[in-house]
Length: 480
Length: 157
Image (cartoon, each protein chain N blue to C red):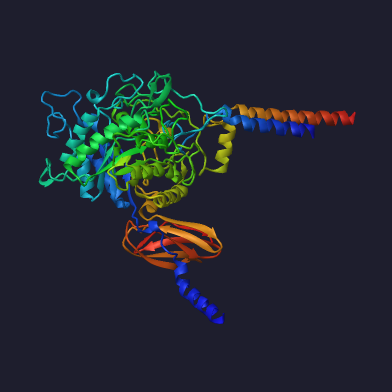
């Protein structure tokens, strides 16, 4: 008995260092790539574009989401002999997109191209006057031709018209449409079937997605096709302008209901990545109130049908699909008087990254590098001040949180959980404030873009931070 | 005691009625006039009626004319649409700013307590009761003071 107690004591002593840094979870091996989506990437002058891309790179982005506005790139009326699948066909206007991709490529920012808005000739007839141009039942075959043109132009093998010595950058990721569960982007969302109102957009979107998937893969087998990018909230009931995202995804994957009863699925959706936009109306951990809405902590409402579809062949090819967040953010105060305070803004950004990563997300695109200008258009309530930089380029606290995200959460009984994504490869030190200085309480080697989560044995309240090389994270208070 | 009970009952009724009086929508902080990203909440009697998709809709500020992303407020345009509207506004002739709040009741997490109380009382978003709630509260206080004064006058005589 005494010997057994001694052995247990020895084991406890040996295990003590491990208790400081708890065992890694299965998620620890997964990376997290963070980037930005900002309409200014394609929206304004070359000088602005360059400044925005430079800002993105400076704060540590590794990827950027860029719009490929089909209606603006394609001719409004097709000239004679126009071949929509040939990017060199007269009538196509690639200047802005070429320039944006050049800017991204120069800064080693991997581009995700989002195709949206059909030219009028590629829409189905009968668009209601209240519906936005470019959104009414875009023709899958026409979309496929445009996707093929895009994939060819940005295959990495086409000579840059402005730099004859170089090729235009290769685009590795293509997203088919934006928020297809909103009438703002895709209509109609619902249709009449006898006396019932039934979903219309998921099946039409599936046709669009599959046509574009095949076209892109024929050109570049390794390019990833990203689906959905669903908006987080729907209108209750049926027939609204916004279909709840979980409902949309279930219908896309041929499930009848929340119990995932199977519907017939002759042509399953083809995709590599499912994406979503979990904008929150509160703090990062706030759940959406409606069962088919999906805020930050609710991603299981999408992944559960996705995994079931993988198992049953309701999504192709039959392999595990990745999960991306192609938009998320909050507005900050300053400058928006109704935004969240700047320190909270930074804290929430890091907490959102952690929550998303824990649910299996491996890429997140923050909405806006720099704030929008409220003096033009709809003022603060209708514009976005969610940048990690103010409009003039000066950094918010969120810039540091984006570059070096750090979360510390009190777990009680002398434990504090910390989550870190180091901006550079090397040793990461977790430090606690002591008087006017800092003392290191844990160390760990880390790679850039590979977050890790661990538990510290610390009693009482502490202010903590992470240090990697010469860089320090934001500070967080936590009680162990 | 009776008066206190009456006041408490009145307050309870007001609190219970507020969701029904409001539009049951939560907007992301700072974006109260952006329709797409508000959270709809079912009303007390279940699902609310919503505009029918594809049917002609009542005029709504921000619904762009086909192909037009530069007119009116930017609500209903989506994020990229608003960016296009900004670009159009920036490059077009100057006009008066439209800073009017739209149909949204911003959830106030992350904001100061004082701002939350002011919003709740004043109904800065569509989910509040507007000027009705402070007026009712004021009326209740006046009634309470009047009743107290009356009781004191009765006791003195």
